[in-house]
Image (cartoon, rainbow, N blue to C red; front, side, top):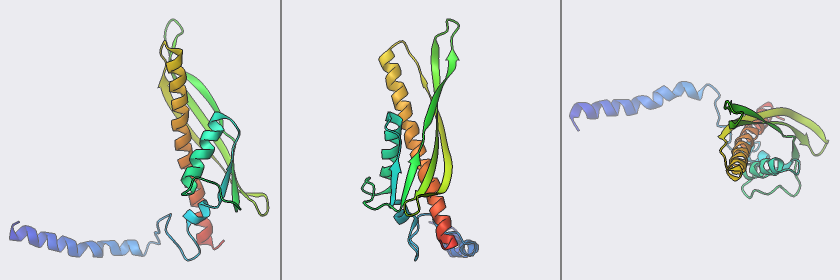
Length: 178
């Protein structure tokens, strides 16, 4: 390294902490940080999940449970229950002149509620939505496999979105002192 380069690097390293000072006063805290009143991660681990006994319902439930707790299992005495009510529909995207559908889009909408198990009252109601498309071919087995794979990918994305919405709720509750 040249002496000029070394001096610029040293100046940059000294300036970095000074540039970060304005961020310290803005009140930013990481969403999953440990706090004196508990952490969002510990709140999430106290959730049970309820979903319809359908393929999509089970995928959503178990994907969400995997994200909420390290064991992937619901707690013995949950403080809250997340009630999922998924609905889905398909739309034809590409239709050929002979009426063959070559591409479909699957849309899944999941209204959900966070229920306080102590009072059995909803403390949060929200909705998560996702869509994905897949190609259709002449093989019906390939079409079924593609549709199921698309549904699985959507269930993973929805579980992540629901976890984020729940995390934001618990973070706001902690900041509000409740």
